Image (tube, rainbow, N blue to C red; front, side):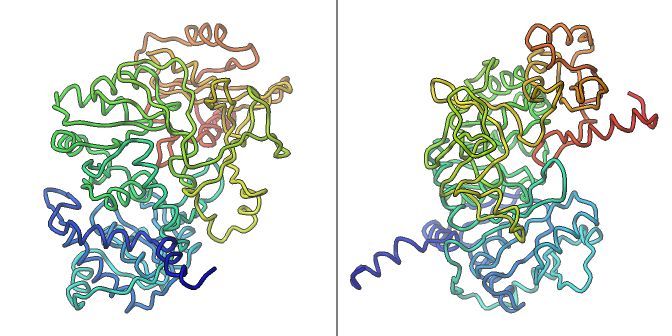
Length: 515
């Protein structure tokens, strides 16, 4: 390459989240960046606090490639830590404060942080050992106040890890997914491109910041110059207040809370200022609930398919129009990524045949922390294997079938639980449904359905007739277990955890529990 082009190459290839945020904060220093419990923090104030915290982290011995663990609920300091660490090329490991001490210790030990930043009242669940701790509160503020206010040097590079987000798979211990500066910038661009979100749109960060929806979109909103309204969890009144006062780009609604949110929105009669798109993971939400919440918000529902590892891609372009009860939920492939469906030997399947979805693109994560074997398996042949089965329709859309790793093998036939669940939730009296496998002497395994009713008029006989009408006989659940909606075990993203329901079946079979 000619020497005179070296500068052009450097200028075009080394952008980081740190540099982009600093640039945006200087351009609109006096504008609001974060709202939190009635307090407004300007871009200038946020930048100043991030620069001071960067000095604190540097003085604590953190260097490029090190990790800082963060155990906190949603509050402005969360973003401060992520962006201050980013300046140094340090990775923030976002810990789930809902975990037990044992589970939390595993996640901390996995990343070997040089510093743990923790809210004071969460310190008791942290088995610290000899780790250095900085408590959010007076000690944190004292450290910031002692720093000389100056612009720190940004040493991070585009492929450096920005955050580690822990995946909550259906079984086994969590894996730490490394999201780089490059991936976060690409995700920010995809948000704007695919969801038509502008720099004037705000984001309500109510979902835990240790989850991709809040961390990804909060950072993306700040890079665009919007306002992040931070709320500590699913709190109806603050959320409705945000809807009344802000134009929202993407209102995150996850399975398990859509119906409660719609009921509150209807009861309070909130005048919504504007929402471009709402929801996520439409396959896991009762169709009638999608129709109700979109009608109330006058915003389409996001028929999404993505993951912590991928961001919104590979298939999050499809929208469900307000007030429509969806009969099918085909996905539309996003821009800026490549997608293939493959068989167990990684051969691309023909149209209409089920295959595992594999993808590649700039939003993709950089692998799992300290998991070489898993990375080699999941990134084989240059594609990331997601573990989800889809079919490609004639019109190019993608139809979700189920997880690769959760199949029911009944009499030699593959039974996909998600297909049965969609049929069950087509009855508007069903609030939630989850299908799991149970051992069977004749067929090896058979499907069993757990159901929560929103209307007690629905009976087992009703659901049996529905399944027999819509499904092949071998797919019909052999048993129906009616439980309360609140009894469904869920991950932090709202997904029902099938392995825990299986454990309930096993316990019941052993005489330790009754449904």
